[in-house]
Length: 172
Ligand code: GTP
Ligand code: MG
Image (cartoon, rainbow, N blue to C red; front, side, top):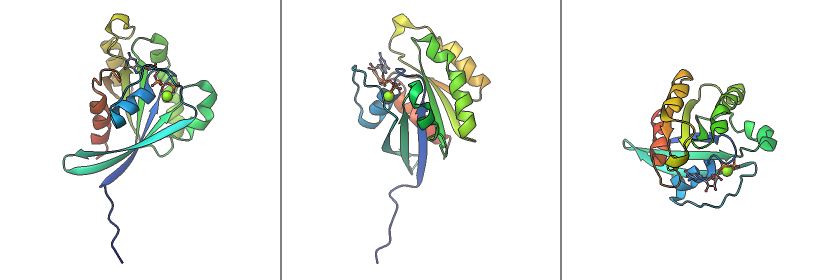
């Protein structure tokens, strides 16, 4: 019989969390399909996508879970933190409240996931005229919580690939 070969060296589970509307689904669509839509279709429960990357001669398959930010789905989505290799907490740089809530997301994550790599993403970097959370604020918060920080834009693609790559490199 034929030997089954895996088409990757590593399989990692990544989870996107954060308030509703911060751009989690758009970040995933930008990364996975290189597309962007301005229409807002709020995620129901969870979605996931696979994306395979080549990093330093290593084939990494990412299973990326895109969770719903809406409060009413909190009990469903928390189950998906379990077994996550990396968790990306996303806030919207033009929405101070979404940044203030990052602390609560971390508390929630800590209840269900241990030892996962954590990244903080300040999204909607393109909206420079409406910024409510500076790079310095994001950086300082991330540093004090043992996270790396990146500013992204699903619209312009700014640092989207870098964010997923950074999470992956921390896992290899
Ligand atoms: P839930 O599924 O409800 O948790 O929201 P979400 O975090 O998945 O947000 P989603 O990706 O659906 O984006 C919400 C809205 O923000 C949409 O109208 C997007 O077009 C817009 N958006 C997302 N990312 C960006 C970005 O980087 N820049 C700008 N200008 N708009 C963005
Ligand atoms: Mg969504």
